[in-house]
Image 1 (tube, one colour):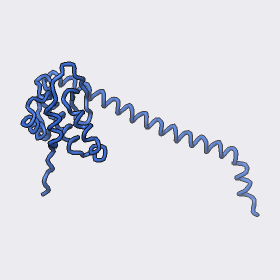
Image 2: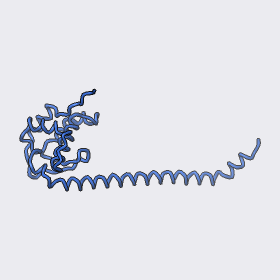
Image 3: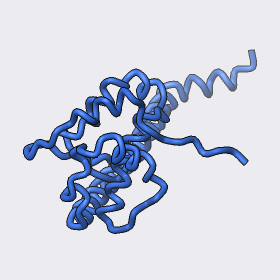
Length: 168
């Protein structure tokens, strides 16, 4: 039986997150990969900048994964359905950085659940629209190639037929 890899923040990431301070004017963003919000005053952006070389070269970068787990866990709290799968980095932050702005009650309150669902529906619609656009463009490219083949056949048709009939 294989052992599950633990997802935790590094000491350098914890050092940055411990310095984060609440800003009532912080910007809020929706992360479609974790299904939750994160705020500009939480220091997560700075952590990702510091570890950008890791996350750019490895989509399973531990810091990026820990970040997404924390955001996903907080979103599950807002939905009043805590998902234990994402809890470990949340607990690590709670122990190491108890004053982290991301622990503020209003950032996990149930009233956010409706907004989170609306964000997800918006993202889903956008993805479906992009897929439809991609298919439409693909069909247009096929039609254009088919049209050019028709043009080439019209132009070369008489010559192509003549060559085929010429026994020389």
